[in-house]
Amino acid sequence: MLYEQAQLVRLAETDRAPVSFLLDGIPARALEGDTVLTAILTQRHALRTSEFSGEPRAGFCLIGACQDCWIRTEDGQRLRACSTPIESGMRVLTL
Amino acid sequence: MTVPANIVIVGAGPAGMRAAETLVEAGLHPIVLDENARWGGQIYRQPPAGAGFRRGPRALYGFEARKAMALHATMARLRPQLDYRPHTLVWACETVADAERTGLAGTAHAALSPGDRHDGNKGYLATLRGTHEQAVPFTHLIIASGATDRILPMPGWTLPGVYTLGAAQTALKSQGCAIGRRIVFAGTGPLLYLVAYQYAKAGAQVLAVLDTNTMGAQAAALPKLSAQPAVLAKGLYYVGWLRMHGIPIERGVSLERVLGERRVEGVAWRPSADAPGLDTPVHMLECDAIGLGFGLRPETQLADIAGCRFRYDTLDRCWLPERDEAGRTSMPGIYVAGDGAGIAGADAAERSGRLAALALLDDVEPESSTASIASRVDSATSMRRALRRIARFREGVETAFPAPLERAASWPDTMIVCRCEEIDAGTIRRCVRSGAASEINRLKALTRIGMGRCQGRVCGEAALAILADESGLAPEALGRLRAQAPIKPIPLAAALCDEQVAEIPEDARDE
Image (cartoon, rainbow over all chains, first blue to last red):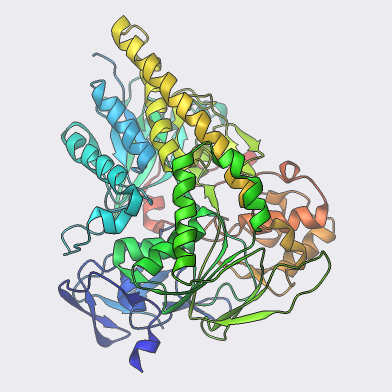
């Protein structure tokens, strides 16, 4: 039941080239042209946990206004997942 | 032309693009700063370039395909004659007038390279592209900053799987994704039906459309909505299509809460009560995603920090930059256009973008030829006529789809209002009841509502609704949530490197 872990569902444009990246240290695959948010939420249902309550969050506006989708890379860089394209070899953390 | 003009347009949606076109046609060479990767704004947003996206304009933009293609083609054609800068966030604006008023005269000039320091520059924008920081001077500035969804919360609205209606649309348009597998669209406004239609048409499972407004409100708005028969017809088509495809549409509902522990598992709602005061049973609808929105709100932060004067607008029910019919603000050389100047939609945005550019041309070259003046006057007159028609339609939209602000009284104390810092309704109420705050900036200072990373873009409406409910004051008496630079989060390094950004003067700070 792996698909039920995902929040976003791909409806179209699925024949783009695959992109490999590391999601919480585990090899994962996205598609070229995905945002980091899409890359993560097509296999998970959350992007991060709130620094206040620890509740899971998965973004909200997807256009760079709500600032709810900031996550970190393994080297500590912060990125806004909805407006950052996924790149091959990216190492992103949702933990 | 010998005008020493540094003309900058912020935003590349319909307003920014038409403004750019009008200026290029007059022989000017504007800079267009776009936070997005490609021009189009939100409504005509394009999928990422060169990544193998294949859907055509018809699939992406539906009935608006022709308009989208025309605008995209216009920008492609103009590209060599303008300085288009994608991925570029404008995070601060300092004007010379501002510097003089605060006794920091020359600060704005100091940021500019010697070549840019001619007297015509009225200020500069602090921009960030990736990690590249740049001050962009301007003699004239057109702000076409667009809008975001107007959001009202309900318990559980921060769970993963709740997205704005705009987010739902963006996921589909630019990523080919749905926000979930079993989706409910809830809230109110034309976008509610449009997004539900687009999703169902793309093959998503749309379980229901829950509109907080009644059929009666929508029927009452018909005379005004008839001002734009074609737009009204499209709206009715979406509703008809949804009905024909068996998608339930419930009107006059109360949205009670989002169900779920770690993610959306459903939504609880009440059908329209037959008589006032008569409670109807709560319905539970299982789903794994909710698209939520209550119309649009303008992005006005840049006009705010540029020093433009604001007025309360009863139709948009928010503060808007003051402007004349052509888009001139209270600051000489600064113009506003499109939804960022007041919600009016994409068609109006194209016209107001052109109008602002025509006003700018009048202001920079008062001695142009009679022929070009005559053609500008004709063009401006026809733009204004169209805008008045759209304004009447807009009144109809607000009559048909008002946001249910009165629900604020029933929001539980434990409900999160600010999703950035998780400030709940009780905290806001207690502050107002204690008498410590009856104005929104004071409330912000004391509770941190609107002070988080989104600067109140998401929670501002709800905070004002609670403040209005608790204080009993009229909306225009509640104050205006002031914007602060950086208007969106930037890496600390960018702010530190930019020594020229003046410290915020004492009297402009929050208490």
